[in-house]
Length: 204
Image 1 (spheres, rainbow, N blue to C red):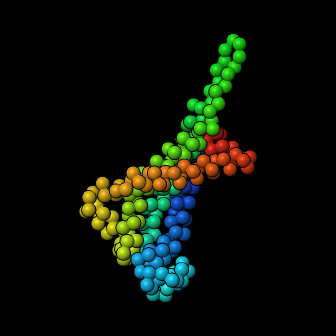
Image 2: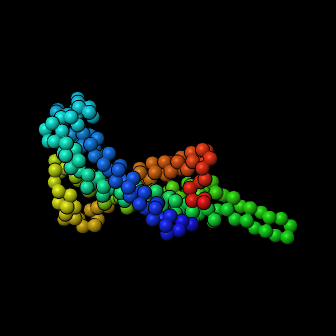
Image 3: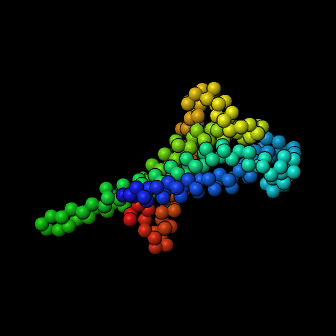
């Protein structure tokens, strides 16, 4: 099972990865929203063309106006997904590989092939729940012209619409959609690690 130092490193590396992902996702998300909401001006420009036009009209900082909202989704999502997968897998391995010794023989019950599947499914649920408020903030931020509104104004607006419950609207649908994606990603990731000769997640 991961010790405190390992858990801290898992957390910090996941936090940094989430922040980098948020930064990189902001420009294409800004362009995508413009293309969808204003097809007459941006529809035929494509990603690069739309970004170029946005920068010319509003400055390069405008394509990062949704960065706080993107952070509020990506950081909890990445931390919950990556850290919990490692922790769940480390917890499950001893439970799924048991050895029973009798006077006649030693029997090993090896069901470790189930570990990455169950750990990934658990991680997907946790990642969805932890990032759901951020997903709602991100959706509200990029709807119409809200990407120019301050982050705290968006949060306050959502809160006024229904308190904590407003931040978790659509969780069930997202659990199915995103849950399938995350579970598949993590199972394939772990399988590829082992295929390349690396130890399975949580097994060391």
